[in-house]
Image (tube, rainbow, N blue to C red; front, side):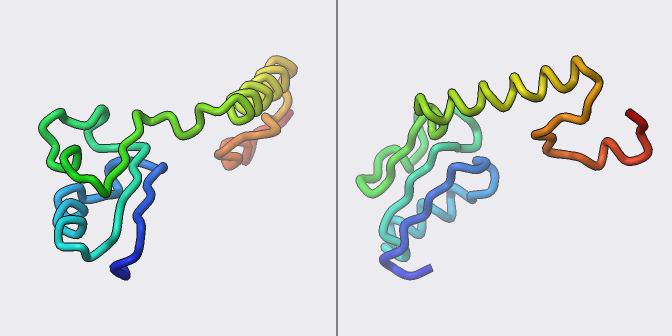
Length: 103
């Protein structure tokens, strides 16, 4: 990564090696980091990342906007109604479960 890069992780905490990230940050190999997820979660209170001024750590709330949570509820309700009707879920994340099934 370039020295002016900012690492952003809102996926899974385990995809970032936090020790390597700490070294990259203190050595200015990257400029900053923003983490919405950590491994473990919550981050340990003695994590050296918490002492850096070029790190922002949020408590896994990246999706906590009104708009996002409203859309999540809408998609869940659509899936629930379809499931109750015995129909394929319209927002299924693993549609391979339907292979070979009859509806």
